[in-house]
Image (cartoon, rainbow, N blue to C red; front, side, top):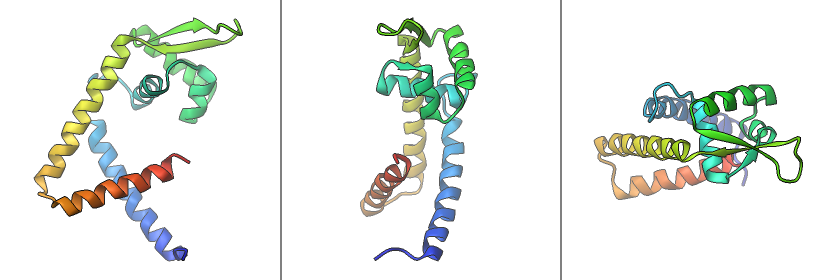
Length: 146
C-alpha cells in the first residue's frame, strides 16, 4: 500500500531537517580546513570510482563543466589531483586522484566516522535502535542513489 501524500510530506520534512543538521555537524570534521565540501566530494568520487573526465565529474556533482574545471584547478594546485590526456581522444582530459588526495579523503572519512560514533555513544542507543538507524540509512541510500 502506498503512503499518503501527507505522510510523504511529513517524512520528507523530518528527514530534511535531520539530515541537514547532521551534515552540518559532520562537515566540521575534515582533514584540511581550507578544503571545500565540493572539493572533498570530487576527491571522494575519484577515490571511489577512479579516473573520470571533467564532464563526468560535473554531471555527477550536478554542476556546470566550467564550475568543475575551477574545482579541479584548485585541487590540482594543491597536489590532490592530476590531469592526463585521454588515451582514446587526445582532446579529452582525465582526472586522477593523487596519493595525497586519497589520504585526505581517508582521513576526513575517519574523522567524520569518529565524530558520528561519539555522537551516537553519547545517546546510549540500544542495539535495536542502532539496527533501526542502519535500516534507515539503507533506505536513505536508495533515495540518494536514484
